[in-house]
Amino acid sequence: MTFDTTTIAYYAAICGALAALAPRMRAPGMRVIVGALVGVAAATLFPALRSALGF
Image (cartoon, rainbow, N blue to C red; front, side, top):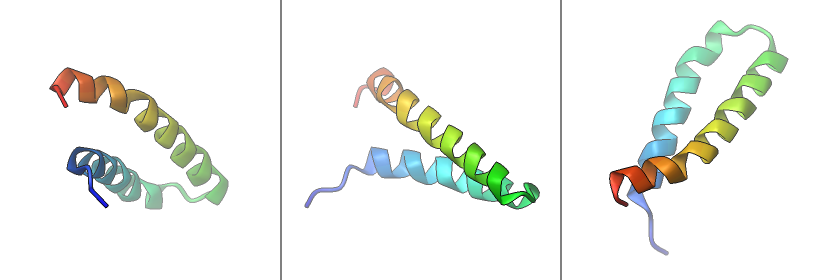
């Protein structure tokens, strides 16, 4: 099994930022919605970012 360090670093940064902000959102439903939106945005933007960086 090979690991793609670029992908791992990208999603680690996104998840870390979301985790830092999540405690400020008290409603669990809001955390789920924001998490889903961030996940969709991250997955959508990653291929373009990766291409721009030359990976």
